[in-house]
Image 1 (cartoon, rainbow, N blue to C red):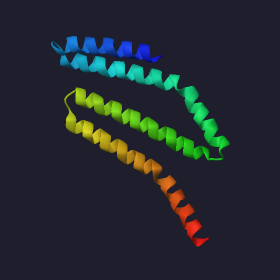
Image 2 (image 1 turned 90 degrees about the vertical axis):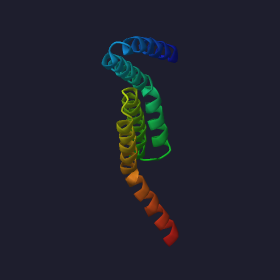
Image 3 (image 1 turned 90 degrees about the horizontal axis):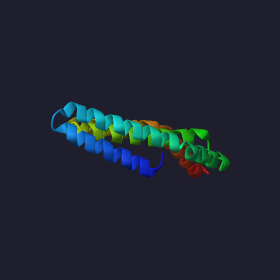
Image 4 (image 1 turned 135 degrees about the vertical axis):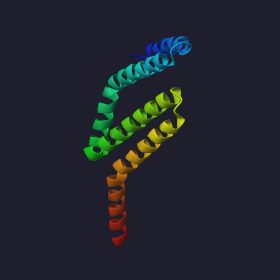
Length: 129
């Protein structure tokens, strides 16, 4: 799906959600979440060639595939946490949205710990000579 299709779908969903919001708030939220999910999945499927290209580039540079996996997981966590946070804010649940954002950040830190360990080992090796 191209950006024109994504923008069109988002505008249509926003108009439908705005019309529903007057009478049925819960349906408006469902329309918004459903449209966001469809757009998110269509973007993920359309960027899969780019992900493959980045993975190939990293492996040709001699970097471990573990690093590419951590990179892609981190990007996915960012997108999902932002999407869930925005959905919570649309539903009027600001505290829950903040908790989702915090959970995403902590998950990314936990995911990156092996990289920090590798950097520390490399620095230690350079210092010891």
